[in-house]
Image (tube, rainbow, N blue to C red):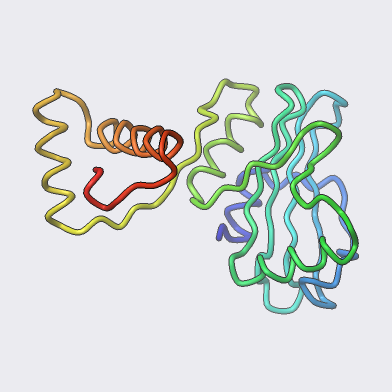
Amino acid sequence: MISMKEFMELVNYRITEGGEYMWQCYGPTAYMLDSSNGEPDGHSFSIIFDTQDQTVYEVQAHDCVHQRAYRMINPDFEKKHRKESKRKDINRNEAWENVNYVDLGVDDDFIQKGLAIAAGEDYDTGVMVNLDLPDDLLLKAALEAHKQNITLNDYINKALANLVERYKADGRFTGTDI
């Protein structure tokens, strides 16, 4: 989960609003800070954190220009957030009307998207994932990537896309499909 420091650097230390976080899922000392460029079709960022121990519960990036919203929820509090959303009968995935959050799991993915959004630049809308591959599979993938004259990252992306397509076709896959 990104830190308070990383968030503050992302927004260039520009805070435009703040207040107590009104949901209970993050506890009684949860606080929310917002940073907005002030334009209706602009961008904004939010962080929800604990005022006592600085635990970051959630970060959000809102790209109103492209109608995209990204979010990271601290995995230790994901279940509580989901339960409170259900109890309040709120669609937890909806950022604003007709725009759902894309949940991110890699800090650098959130930061890179956030920097581009703030700068008004184009950015990759794909989602980064962490993979922990066994050494033998990693070596096999690296050799195949070399044979195809592509990067290991490109090879892994192709392999994952193929797995998804196979899953869509027959509803299953095995560890030997890579």
